[in-house]
Amino acid sequence: MSGDRDGPVAGVLADRSALNAFWAAHRRLRTVRGGPMPGSLGRVRIIAVLAVFIVVLAAVLLVSMVLAAGARRRRHALQTAARWAVRHYAIPGRGHTVVAVALTDADGRIHNEHVVARIPDGAQDWQRDFIAARQEAEERAFHLNSDRPPIEG
Image (cartoon, rainbow, N blue to C red; front, side, top):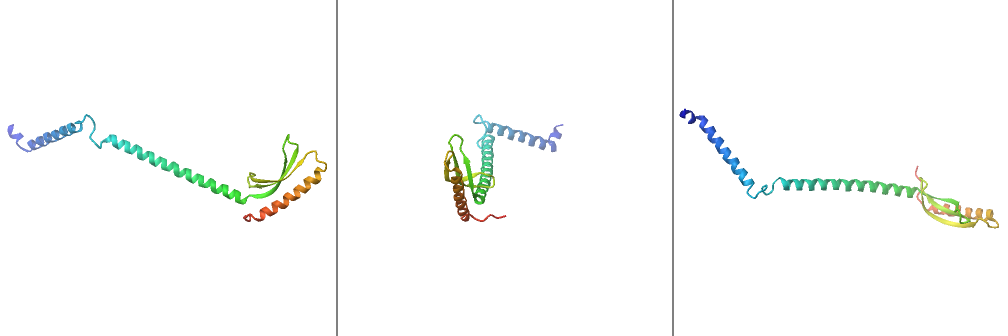
């Protein structure tokens, strides 16, 4: 039997014991400080979490910049396409009618307004004052629109 151990099996057993000795030494080295070796899995996890956080933050910033730029372009296009138009309205409880020209976009939003006249509800010749203010407002709207770019479409 001792002859069997001296043959090819002895080499395998010797290799196995050397391998076991290597792994035992490796485990001892890993736990020398009572924790993982420097540069171990703990640091890798922190770096991975930070990398994921940076990628997500960059994606969120990119998406918000794209959305903000689109909204800015749309708002600019609406203001460019807006036209001055005559507008009149009464303010409840104030007792007068306002005649104005307003810069109104296609959505009906008013971007600017110039008041032409405030006509008291009890004015002696309310209709004449209203017609004169409306005519003045139409002239202003015409001249203000002449400075705006032409409507494409």
